[in-house]
Image 1 (cartoon, rainbow, N blue to C red):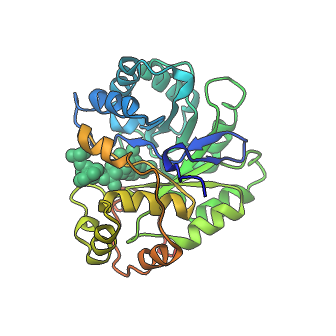
Image 2: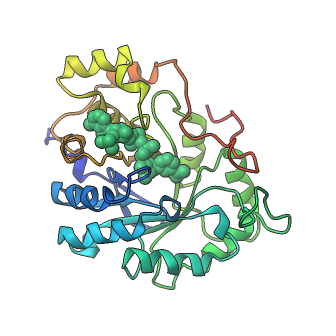
Length: 297
Ligand SMILES: NC(=O)c1ccc[n+]([C@@H]2O[C@H](COP(=O)([O-])OP(=O)(O)OC[C@H]3O[C@@H](n4cnc5c(N)ncnc54)[C@H](OP(=O)(O)O)[C@@H]3O)[C@@H](O)[C@H]2O)c1
């Protein structure tokens, strides 16, 4: 059997484009940390970077890409439309491209299904994510986005979107929280049945992750001579979603990418699937609208 090369693995989207299975996350990276992290990741071999206008770091991400010397066309770059910008999709994308210093992104996502009135903790009553998607669809063919998708869409909202007559383009990706304590099998299966690829965020359990001290995960990682982080990433890839671990620490960035040459057995995957503790990093209680309905599992 050929050696497993997880870092070279890609998932083919419904557009035919291939998203690298592992990318670098950049949320909560402090100013002046992101440029170095992006540069370190690209130099370590990563070819996929995840950012968002809401992270306030697109300019630094762009600077990191330039500093790495890796040609733009070898990098998968994802950014996201924030909630305040739902009524100005084309302009918000132009803002992101200008900050990133690039002509196009590989993937542009609606960050949350919440069309928030700028400056208020309320959503528009004459506009929702279906209207936003109509505008997103107009970006296809402009050369500024290769793929469009969504994020934080539960089954209920995916159904609303896909069943609307104005929906002509099926989202290429739904980026959602996925780790052993928030596995969302119903959501992932539903997305797959509609041709939507899932990307798992907070795949390591995010800041101060409880997963690093989880007994089941630790025992399994120790037995394989791998870190818990490496096991979590390979588990996600074998489950069929792309993973975007965040780190601003070059040694961790490298270690998280050191996942070639091995895989998890079916029994090991089942063991991780069997973790019963539950937690969610990103809730919807800070939004003026509910977007999670507790029925993704
Ligand atoms: N679409 C959305 O709404 C959404 C929401 C959340 C996240 N995301 C995306 O998904 C990415 C990943 O999620 P996340 O940032 O929540 O968290 P994460 O990737 O699950 O975990 C990041 C945390 O783990 C630490 N870490 C990373 N590698 C490590 C290692 N090998 N050993 C020990 N600690 C390690 C990092 O520390 P250091 O950085 O200090 O090294 C950081 O504290 C985000 O950065 C963002 O791009 C998207």
